[in-house]
Image (cartoon, rainbow, N blue to C red; front, top):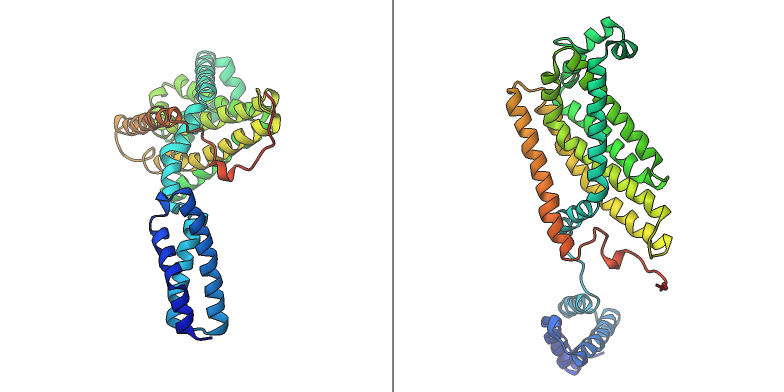
Length: 335
């Protein structure tokens, strides 16, 4: 095959393809059809050149043109950084915001129950006697006792990683086991609430309630919020199984399940922050007001992130689900 003759015969087609690729976002219907046809021809030409007359310069030129044509015809994927940005600025905060009717009441009920338990334990010596012996209570609540030393039992980085892993497991339990009608979620919430109430009650009875709050609040505000978000979302998933609404059960569970995955991924970052605070700030030598202040600022920042950024994204139509292209297809359903 005479390469020069082949190039001369098809140069105009390649030039036209190059022109259409350059403005692929502004093509008419006829031009889009022409783009597809010219791309297919150029791909065939590239195959012929490779097999019959593999000229390096021509191969490089045609390969680049075909690659650009393929991207214009099939569409290119969004850069990874853009997907990450969309996840944290729209998808995750919107998913958390849309679930607030589940996790905010969950937080209110659990915190109220913890406060009642704490007051009951602090005000009743017989209850405390059933929890532990006097020596054990002293070992727990005395200055330098187990409640205080717990946060400095090892290197800060190692402790933060341990806390993060544990909290991530609790959150994952609440999120993914919500499908079991929410029962594992309720059990996890009860365990968390009981630990909080018992710790607060015992320390308050020992006259060290302020120390307890100084140890819990710096990291606990964000940590507990993350747990409540996970629990509320898990309960919502369990309720979707019971009452899928107007959609079929499989469609409703699929949509809510994908939102659960979005929230799970986002909470990994949230719990990483709370774990870092628990490992580095809570046991630090900072004054109590400074440690609590850090916790309050971080908590307010997260709530603003959800109720300002998430609310705005939800109003723009963001549902917290993955893009439709990744969500799969469903059969048409009757209303």
